[in-house]
View 1 (cartoon, one colour):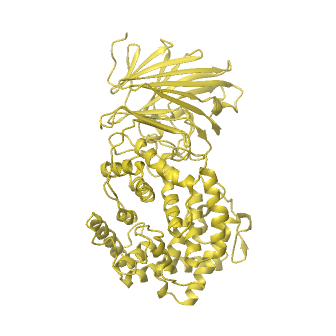
View 2: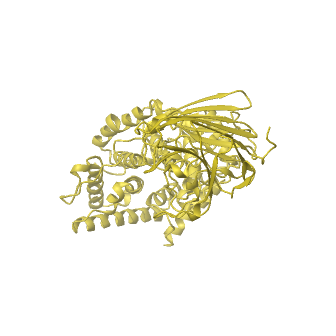
View 3: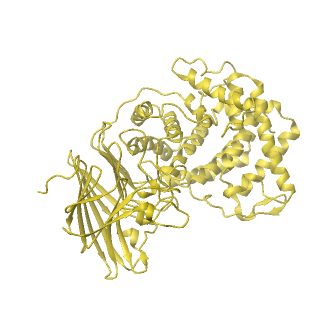
Length: 565
């Protein structure tokens, strides 16, 4: 039987994940906390009061109201949550009666997690305000939704067939999967559904565990944009643990390693992260609430770990010291302990295929990122072998960050060796590429075998890239073999206009010095002059070198062009 059942979510810390596991039936534990949560609570409740006053703040959700009601004891907040969920269900019922799909089915059910978790949390925390008829209608809606999600070919609404693609239902590396998992778990716990709990225990969580069992290093192969969806995975996992389920070792490791990953993926000025993969929210990967949210949730899962101490240091030093948007205020209620500045200056995640390195942990340090690993996600780019450099600002970075869309994936916007034929560029395909790293204490030697990215082509036989990363100079060696009809073009995308300086090319403080061939053909492209359908290149330049005969060797100096030795 459905019902309040002593606030199941509150007991487990479900959804908001802000409280210890306890009965929690008395005073809200975070309101008067002297450790800094008082301000977070005031901001959060003010946000909820705004919704109660009908100001309709952007991104406000029913579970915000339900949480505020539970923390404060104000029933008005619970009534607001019930009203919002009832509106969702009534809207769905009207659509179904008209022979249409409800809103929850849009975009391949992407929003099923937030929408059903709103319903589930509200039913659990505010269920005393619901009539039995209301609970029954909500249940029918939730059950049909989940049945449709996991059975795409048989999906139906109101008896009318509405099959869908099933995108993401079998891929725990995809952001859609985490939304499906969230919806299923919240409803299973709210309704005490033995069927859905069994589905979670015997199928969905084991599927996640299997995917991450051989995934080491943290981060996501979807990149640093869509990879932020791991915050949802961590939130749902923490809920699962607090409901009394056994821990999943592969996920425990992912949580710890992801803290390390994001600490290193952040540039030295601590206001931006590596630009890897689609950046659909904003093209430039500036620090945002989602980064803070992911780290707070990861920290909450493993607060005693070494990685958590580094994460706490990161959280206390990034340029975003509290959430900027009200929709994320609730996460600032999470507790944070003492931090410790990292000491390791490079980090490679073989799971994600992303490498990060810096000369020091000072804000003026030289920092780099490089991609080489498994390429198998649609939000990833054709950037195997590509790298970026940063020192107080971008020295070189993918042109994607200067586009309107943030989703330019092709090789021409990356810093790599581009293979050109009379018919067009040879693109990269899903593949498993390899990277090895060695350090001599002052420099990092990186060797990447990118040949697998071109294994589909009969025209590109081999490409190996070696990169020597030092404090003042970065040397790139490319060894390749191609068919006679293929031209290999060495390219570097730049935020500042490059200018010829004899044999050198200088863009701001970055100096590009070709070593082999010594006198390549040089082409300079101004990206805003490039016309591409459905895209705008807002700024940026590109230097192309051609004329190589199986090898390119280029030195990059980060403080201008020194005398040639």
